[in-house]
Image (cartoon, rainbow, N blue to C red; front, side):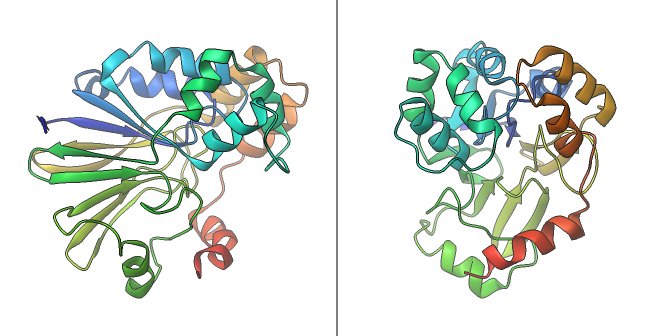
Length: 252
């Protein structure tokens, strides 16, 4: 396995193209050897454009499936059950056949060698489930349960799903959540992570919520786009609000 020195991690883009563009323009992202996408990539107001931009990264992009990617591909193929939200069926209907095939074929985990960290496992929610909820303040026993199948040599796990960035130790294993590019909770601005031989850095790019909302409103053809950007872009939920909302699902 080739060992990488600089890896950028982008999670939960949710089809918000202006946020993705801002992050991809960051010097440390441009110079990263790989850009790992830890799921929930296109379910949002600009799914086609978001996927096209990421595909243009070529082999620098390493793709990991999130629950929203799985659901989007299923809906696009007419296989989905109840839609998780109002925008997802619309987004699924926008996708080209090649994009549906791309999302449907994504792996649930990827392991890469990163200099200074050794083998790093990348996933969306947890290594065993793309919807499972574990929080920064979940007890060690809960973390131990969801990591029960992770190989012993993997000492770093990088995830997303909760839209809140953090880094914490779990029984001598480092757990990193890269946050969210398109729908960050806790503070405004796209959040992402950088892995280097010096360790893990949690980063946040400068993008005013109203600027992002205005750009998305003008570019997206989603009929209810104004209501969507008011709910998910102009509003920034605090980490306390998000933790309390997620806690019932995180108790296992």
